Picture 1 (cartoon, rainbow, N blue to C red):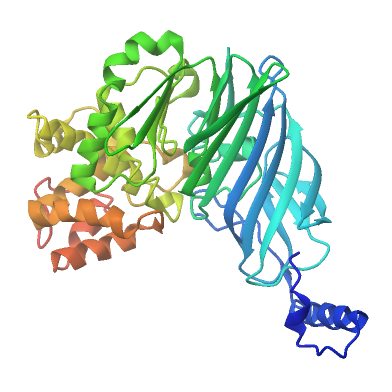
Picture 2: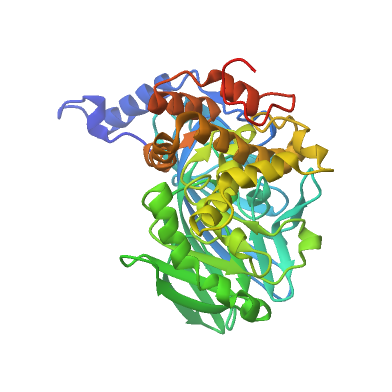
Length: 477
């Protein structure tokens, strides 16, 4: 633990060093007499086993050494956090992998494992408000994970490396941490791989180093990031760098098998970022990009993830998918839900961005897209549950979250008018930049900007169980 400097004890120069040390130790022990064990949950309504209480992570330093051929990982995680209560012990999320040592500050710490929880017990209790550093040494063969809906995530091995994705649980398959969107932190990620391979992570590449036939890539992500948005994808990528606007760097890594099919769409990335700035306000991060790997989408069960600064695509993306994942940089990555129940704040906005992009390009309007979704035949699951309350983990990425989430926004647009609506689209991600928010926050925000009570609109479209009249935006039906 971080001990107070001697002068904090209020001792005079006449006291001996021994007395000073004794006084400081006694005072510190008294202050943490009532220290308790940090809980292994943040009580997420969909994923109660994810996340831990008692501390707030400020920074992760991950040092990974990966054997591409054998699939083994040797790693160290240094986690800087602040205690939010007096802590006798705390927990980290970690699945599989063998922990070989833990230190808190400069002292070795006791640790134990149960399920996906690594419990750390420092030699001395941690006082509330103390910033502390935990170093975990670990390794083994990281495994992919299967979600409640059958999709794959985590550390997924590929023919030439690994496809690393974390929504909603997968980050704990390759590093220990507080695995919940509510605890965001900065990251420095160093990945060592055989020479000829490329390791791509979030943020900006600070440098590379070759030694003994291996290359180390050093990545820095300075803005707060939720654990599910972290990646360290490895492969034999073709890399291209450029600028989007005002020096905003773009870093694009593409598997050669997808390079030709991706070329035209990826060439639009800068245009999409600029369009996003016009609609949603200034781009929230210090770099942008994309990672296009070569994966069978029917094997992993999805096509893309909005990994922060560099969305991860299982194969060559379509333009609408590129728009969707880029929009997530504002909605989901910068403004992140407080819990997984409010994922519509990610997916509804990103889906609506697809509609708006097409409208701005002179194609189908957002209202027309709304009507087509509403009137589509044979798609009853769209009305299976309200977007504001998915109910279970397996519903996390189903149609109501995406399509009905976007429909909520179109109804909001009709209710408040274009001027107020587009002001909301810009000011919402600006006011909550790099923070967490939930549906209640969004509703209150909209009502403040609109200057009117929008309760009934959201009750019907966001939380209602019945199929609403498609023209209904509030008041009596």
